[in-house]
Length: 304
Image (cartoon, rainbow, N blue to C red; front, side):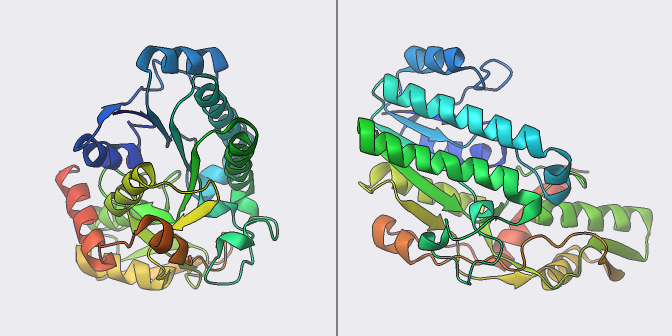
């Protein structure tokens, strides 16, 4: 079976490709050769590969700072790429379409744990809203294309991911790679402290990327409706506790300071994962400490 994986060169794509390649022929077009912002390119790509399944993992994404600097870019590019590839999948009769959504689509003050039924109960957290709304619109597009045209679509909502091949950059990364890099730079420079954005009191749930890859593989194999499905661990950790854990694993003994003038983002994030268990038979296997250890080891090996 042929699987077309968009975003194959990205963080999730590099973790997903080896998992899918065990059982499927995986085709990963790169953005430099295939501009998914053009409908004609998406049509040409699917006509050329003739995939049985499309997994849409491509996206324009980053941390709080990147979202603040690129709200229009992130919203437009995610909307247009997703809409184009979904429409092309319908036009060329692709057997299954798996869309990777985002936890950023949930309303800012969603009760914890987040249930899929809460998705439309309010406006997303402001710094992530354009990205989150774009992804939420695409989930609805998958649903409506299933209803009107019979597109066999699956909507997955993974929580914040981490792991090898992540993008380690202080201005555009998500929280874990940014923290690892900040601690690494402080140790390299001999600094006695690091300063993090926000209060450190907000919480996040984290999913090891390889576990997410296993969930996506199950979504390909199982017959499920296009209703959103949360993919996560169901466990949350405060940012201050996360920072302390990273510092301890990396051997940093300096002080961890917080700049409360910078935004915290959403107050809490933690998913109800019962639907994933029921429909996909999915439960995350990697403990947070183990996944963090593997992520730090990968980073250090690649930054000597």
